[in-house]
Amino acid sequence: MTILVTGIRGNVGSLVARKLVAAGLPVRGTARDLAAPGLPDGVEVVHAELTRPQTLRGVLEGVEKVFLYTVPQGIDGFVDAARAAGVRHVVLLSSIAVTWADRDRNPIARMHLGVEEPLRESGIGWTFVRPEALATNALAWAAEIRADGVVHCPFPGSYTVPVHEEDVADVAVTALTTDGHRSAAYSLTGPQSLTQRDQVALLGEALGRAIRCERIPVEVARAAMEGVYPADVVETVLTAQAMADGRPAAVLDTVEAVTGRPARTFATWAADHAADFR
Ligand SMILES: NC(=O)c1ccc[n+]([C@@H]2O[C@H](COP(=O)([O-])OP(=O)(O)OC[C@H]3O[C@@H](n4cnc5c(N)ncnc54)[C@H](OP(=O)(O)O)[C@@H]3O)[C@@H](O)[C@H]2O)c1
Image (cartoon, rainbow, N blue to C red; front, side):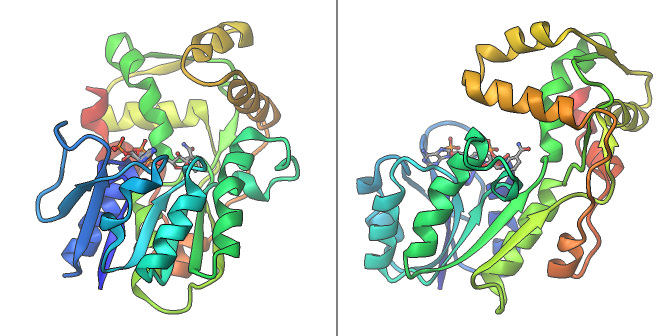
């Protein structure tokens, strides 16, 4: 039973692969650039691009289950190739945004629905793993924290419930390796609703130095994000942050319900990632 992990270098994908290998399971991983550094040991790594399904045929040979990143372009080709190869189950890294009331016009939700829907129709077994904010979003602050310890953000009082990528990977691995997760969609959060200011303070505690959040005008934040993300995604993120300003978000117990272990705190995440901010 080979399990294919797409995105073997990804934050979540690399952990999924590592946990499956530790469990003694045969894993094949994919990367778009086999020559770049950062490939894991102990895993067969092959080239694949989800946007070019013709690259998937050999890759899926002998594969029973897949951990899949959300890449809508090429999903129909993925489904065809997976069916032809006899894949029985796909665990998709999706997003909680697909459950929100604005999902039909929210570009992040639409992107993830663009893969969830074809998988639902595919006849292949599926599990959707839908995190809220990944704690790894805080890595975007690393350069500022390293430089002078001041994080600039438009809504320091905006809440999310950041979830540790280890917990996302644990849920995915549970869905890949145990029964009872077919047609299940798991919305995941961390254990605490935290403002951006709270998260920066917890990072400061992990680093043992004073760092802080400084408010910047929304227009400045928008200008900084525009070169990096599509304009509609920038507006969606800024609108979500504005709406969550001063409003704690719901904490879900799904990580514990699925894995049997409580979700890791952001303080744990900060300790695990302290080196990324030094
Ligand atoms: N950030 C959030 O708060 C949040 C919230 C909810 C859901 N999510 C979901 O989580 C994802 C991020 O997870 P992560 O942090 O583990 O991601 P990551 O570290 O950025 O890794 C993404 C992986 O996807 C692979 N990939 C991307 N496009 C591909 C393609 N066309 N063909 C083959 N492989 C491709 C990459 O492969 P290569 O290494 O070969 O480039 C990479 O390994 C988001 O994209 C979103 O779907 C994020």
